Length: 86
Length: 234
Image (cartoon, rainbow over all chains, first blue to last red; front, side, top):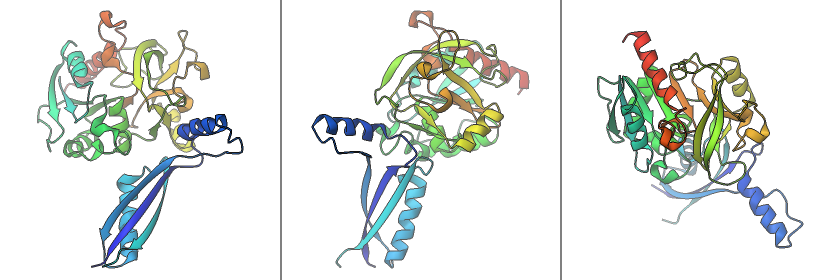
């Protein structure tokens, strides 16, 4: 069965104040990058799955994201799937 | 009244909770190990203590929620058993969806460790019947992620159902931004589920049970549980 590498990017939903992002934004301003705004910090998770096809891999990663990797109340997630060479 | 204190890897308020239970008239404590899959048969309440279960990896409470004992705790709660989640315990209860909402990083980014004032918003619960309505308590907080968040419609429901049990306030009981230590929506410090048998709160009542620690205002939560237990005559 083919192997896929999934990348799950998790970010706080846009309506939620990201205090880490705010703090980093202030620090960037202090460094002179005064044209920077909307800094948001998230999580980047990579994993490998064995699945019959990329669609099945995507579906599994969606289930993982909803049940554990992200908290849908406060976070959005985005999944990308790439097939690994045999 | 038999109270179980769950010990997760990374719990660090389990002994404080145990001590608070053992020194409350009418209560005895025992530890419950996170790997247990069942609860003891003679158990009347469960406490999920504060700490950093599983190192707060991924999100606070996200991993603890799936530890073996939690399935039994969820079932216990669904049957009406009393469950008290303190600090990390509150975070675990939201992750387990026994309580609505989530707890985000404090608005000021800092870990906060100090006494705060909280107001009793509802004393008609098994956890607050020993208090007066509107009573102002002095209880310590110690958290980096205590900013309560829920969707507006959930907040509305919480308020309409009297599920907001504690709100951050000042010494006079006034609720405003200045008395909100962490940016929680509506100054929420603690909520119950709709059925009132599950309470989660960020402040640490178990650290406010001895005058030598600066406050005994937390004792009322444990006394309330005893009163409630006696009143339902189990």
